[in-house]
Length: 263
Image (cartoon, rainbow, N blue to C red):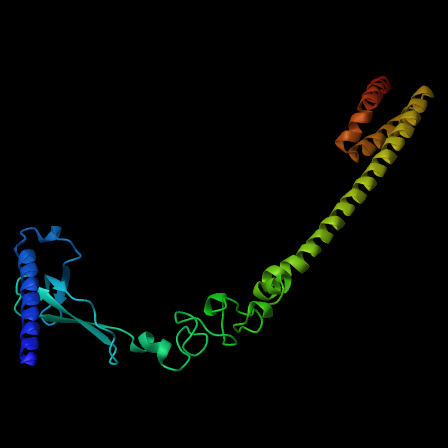
C-alpha cells in the first residue's frame, strides 16, 4: 500500500515538472520577437543532422565520456515533442587526469600540481602554487616546509639566475668600467691641458722671435716665423685660441705691413 502511494507521489511530481517545462517552452515559443529573449533561457543551436539553425532551450552539458564526446538535450521552441541531442568533442583524459594515477598534462607530480590539487611535502613542483605548503624549493623543485627553504639571497639566485647574474657580475663590471672610463677621460683632459700650455708657450716664443726679426729688418725670417705661428694656432682648441687671439691679430697686422712694404 505504501509503495503504491509513493509511486503515485513520484508520478505526480514528474507530471508537474513536465507541465512546468512545457509551459516555459510555450511562453518562449509564442514570443514574437525571439531575438529579444533572455539568453539565459534559450540558445541558438544547429541540428547536426539537418544543418538547420533554430532557437532552443538546452540543458547543461553532460560529463565528457570515454569516447571523447559530451552531449546535452535541447528542445526546439517550434517543436516541444521530442528532444534534440547535441554533441561536441572533448578530451576525456584531460577531464580525469587529476585522478588517473599517472603524471600527465600539466601535473608536476602524480595527480597534483598544475590545474590539479596542490602537492604534498617532497612531491615534485614547478612553482609555489603547486604546493600545499606554498613552498617549492627553487633548486630541488620539490615541495618543502618553510624551514627548508633557502635564505632570501640564495632563493633569488635559484629563482632568478639571470637577474642575479646581472646583479652580482654585470653590475660590478659595469661600475668598474665606468670608473676606468672616468679615469681615462680625466687623464685625457690632463694631457690636452698640458699640450695647450705647451702650444701657448711655443706661440709666445715665436711671437717674440717674429717681433725681433721685424725689428732687425729680417723680413724673410719674420715671414717664416709667422707661418710657424699659424701652424701652432691650427693645433689649438677654441678655448686656448681665445687666450692668444688678440696677440695673434696684432702680429697679423705687422705681417701685413711688412708684406706690402716688401712688395
